Image 1: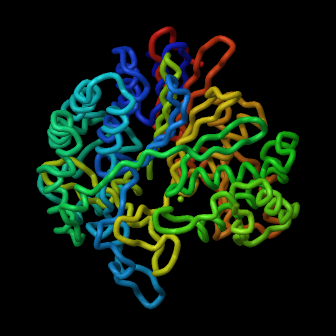
Image 2 (image 1 turned 90 degrees about the vertical axis):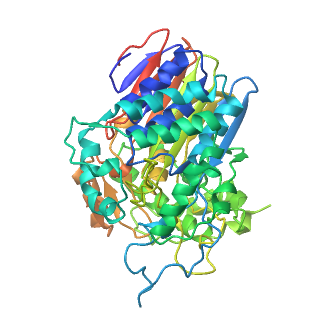
Image 3 (image 1 turned 135 degrees about the horizontal axis):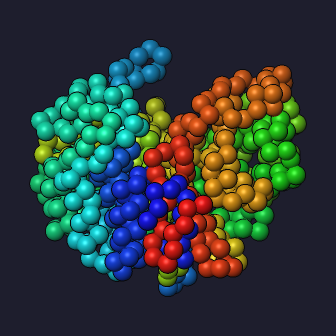
Length: 538
């Protein structure tokens, strides 16, 4: 197996944000597991390798192509607010801002975790191995420990005060580590052993859940046993859209990601993007304006569809895309304003992509929200609990206002691209709101500019949102950006390779010679690992 960012195979492929997790997924494929078994194994392992980004205390989404049935499937294991959650649960100052950090830290920031239920559900429904086989590598990894990378070391330092604020005995993340040390988590190993033996009920209805509830409430939350016991994984179908002859499958609400990726692509389709100078002034300005349009619509219309009406068909209609495209004026900087999609009516993180020789393709994005989540690690569990309540909008009566049992808005967008009904790529990224803009750029790079996957991922990225600040990685020409500045666009320059704009993990498929290429983003620690037939660095 190669230690490269890129790998090629005709048998199976795993592209994940940490080498240990990627290798675990590849070994599951070699042991006879399918892409869904490998996905569960990688998901559990990433909670050990990247406790800063995901784990049993969080949740996520899966978009997948099931080869046997030739069906696209979607699994929602996003966290939900506890039953007592309400807009008055946080104290606000005179300006309407939360006093202190309790919306993003501590017990009041935590939603009901969904990852244990989600990964077990995916493996049981679609996998071919046993739960014990799939979880064993992650359990062993937690016992032996993972080598602390420079990135994880930086995140441990940056979040140390938060972790200390909610410290409980045995927290493995508060030792004095250095890069190259091993981070062992025996409590997490025991937690996963219980889930492996007893299933997800060990988390949601057993001793683990009791420890989680005690900890949350001790740090200011208000959870009951029913909150955990009532969690349900949602089986759904992906959103479907098209872009220049390709079919795009991505996440439906309560994620806003798929909706607004497709909205951006439909607007871009009205322009000859592939004929523009790549990252020239015109290309950059068009991306900036289209991103603002989509994020303005996101802010006004998106929420949990079980609680609010979303004009989904309107947002994704060709007529609406034309209306939005007609409002664009070359080199005129416009405010970020929503339109009215109801006229056309008839929802920090890690990602991994996996494919197997049977033709199954899995794209999963999972998260605990910000790095090290709420900062709460319940004693004896080794679990970092999420701070997903920060995903709700403050105030009452809004689409994304907090309510008990409601899912906070997300941008996570595990995505599969099809051509003539067959998968040609599986991609996804972390990055908060930047997930949407990053995914649009990757898809456009592949389709409009005919880049290979490595080139598409490596290219510098840009971002704009409702506040109307165009942000761009330093490798984009300052001269081209200056054209935007000259026309009144506020800008901010990022690092040359900035983790702020995501960490894409993807796979593309070549129908000509039946091989697949995996690629990992240089902005993260991940790698691509081929399994079986051959594995050749690019």
